[in-house]
Image (cartoon, rainbow over all chains, first blue to last red; front, top):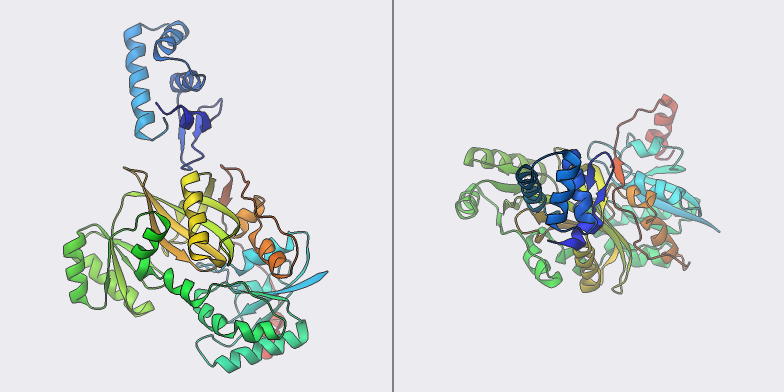
Length: 80
Length: 345
């Protein structure tokens, strides 16, 4: 995971993400925004899973799927 | 100190020239600058933009007599005492390259590329240029006939880009489309027509200005968000891509670039590799955007030419948006009468 790239992303409370290197912008939902904030804070995947399970009252399996999907999307767009 | 700067390319039309943006940047620089618009037609909108262009004069076409061109500048200079000319049109650069020493003798300064620099950035020498600055160039074939075109598309395959020698570029998916674009561009701009391999990616532009000794006066990069049918940027966002900035600085250093320029590149989606598309040898039409973000390149150029201190930093924020828009002016027919009858506003 490219933590340097992650650190320069501008992420607003509304879920609007701006990549200052490519000039592309994206919108994340509340779950995506939470994952991104935790990644930016340097949290590991287990910590993110645990935080999401607590916050969204979901099972670990459900949360794992969402996290993996979201991270794949971030990779696809060269955001991490 | 009052400085008089004459600026061409004040045709702020659907294919906008950079002149009005240059004048606006100069007027907002804090320097005491009088701007003179050099127009080729009495209806160039810049002539009527009184808030940024103090006076305008009609010039003879640069494709005509060299003597008539010089005489017209001398005539304007006798009335206006021009300190600097900023040439902003590709078509007139060759004549300014020829007459720059004559202008220097009468006290008019310019910062434009040399003929060798002008040749180096030719669309037909992209590969050579790319190697020099350590980026890639899309594969391309120069065509002067439909037979050449057929051979080129056989090799490069569809989709491909069909590009004019000066302006216009189209993406062709079939031989029918390629032929139609080929004919359309040839009729408008002549030969050669360039057929280029299509690379999936985003287009970025970097504006800069070189002092002719390998130093830049600042650079500013954008991603094109929307472009017109002629490929002109309409909306853009500022970006900070260090690899792009580094490649641009190599252009300035490697070619000892002299004057304003626009470095057009494409970042391939799959690899994020930089492909050079073109170097325009003058400021682009969006020159005001960087000025509005603290990188006032026309002002820095004038300060350099008039022996003043100038900033050369490239400290700007990413995420600044340029929104271009159209507008209408209401003027009197007498304004048109004056410029069309006397050749000056």
